[in-house]
Length: 441
Image 1 (tube, helix red, strand yellow):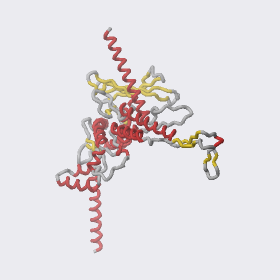
Image 2 (spheres, one colour):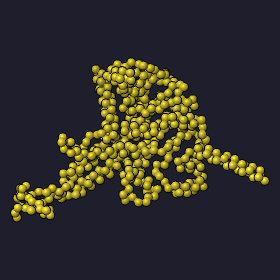
Image 3 (cartoon, helix red, strand yellow):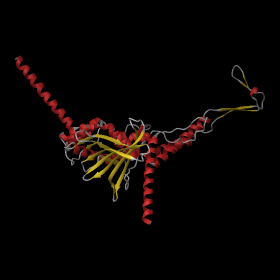
Image 4 (cartoon, rainbow, N blue to C red):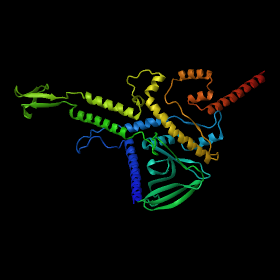
């Protein structure tokens, strides 16, 4: 009896946790697209003073730009272009590498965990699909929270033939040394599912990879860029600004009031001189006695706090007031919160990309022991002349040319190939010139 009660309580907890997760994902997407609740109650027939400043969208897009805004290079063997690298480049090019990575980072930043599914069958090129985390459920090992023993992808769709709503489900489960991929369909209720296809995945690794957006220890699901504390701070900032706008709507313009007169007693002559009926009559303007300095200061304080909590400094979003000519060190100090946040994401997303590349190379017939090195570009812009002078000094200290070329954002293998072609072309032009000279003599 006790065991049954404990099992029932555990199942209720799991269901509640799953429901909470899905609700959080939906809420985060609404916030990202600026569809969250309005800070002030809207009264029918009155003006709407609400202003929802979409900080969440700005913070996530800025984080994605810093993470995958510049080309990410993959390299297996330094100093040469290998067949494995050429194969990887062709697969990623076919899957629109950088736009796919930006979609992946956006999905992860909103939901906290990012998923990529590999669609592949023998004889076809691998296709990479970004999975909506809201549609993915996982079963974890009983003693290892980082080990997934099965996946379920489930989402609503529309039957192209009947035009009726249906539920699509895909189960990815272990099957001997590999995995079994089972495709199922069901009616809109999702109560009964029928199997419409099966595929044996002949590899020890699953056809899906994932990573936490930002580290959440002791959890499978990671942290998003818009956790509850940041959302609450944004809501308070929107509430403050909306109230300021409401006050301005009511009181920004002076209101004329009169005492001791009726409407018919006030006369305005041709030269706009206002005439009152007697000496006891009064006509004045009601104006704001405050410039809302305290409210505006609160708005500025909240806005600064929101940026600090999101780890996206205001200068990163275009605020340049009181910012003059900055050295490289000063610029890094200003951007330090965002740099640290991006470096942390490079760890999580980087490990996933390395594992994804390993699996892609295995599908391409190159074995499953190839681990690529990722070549990230500098996060902040640098003065080209200063950087070039520093590179020459580093060269004299023994730093390899490949490393220095990579710091400038170039591919050493590509540059070597171009240099070789230039050398061959130069030799051909020289030989042609010498031959013409001999014939002329």
